Length: 111
View 1 (spheres, rainbow, N blue to C red):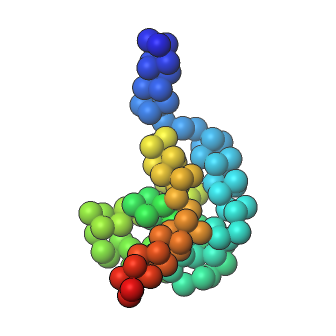
View 2: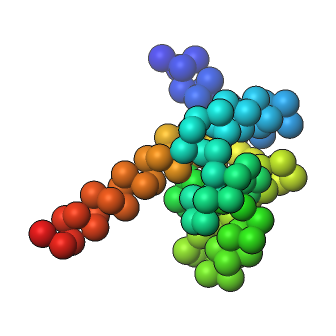
């Protein structure tokens, strides 16, 4: 059990390599919902909102940055450094999951 805890802490504390980041985003971009910007549907988004776990285009990334990091923390998929926690947020998020959450909230709101 001690080794398991050390292993998990190491994964959280260590910074992923550029190759590891690229491999994760290559898989994420292959998912159909992630092939377009979450906000405007432009093809091949290269930015993300870690806060919401969605991929967005360059134009929409500037809008998210203007909101402030307390509302939307924006990272470049290709240029920025990432932590394992941030990458995990992107893996469990994704554009399709975010759309389904927005739809479910709106449906509940209007009922």
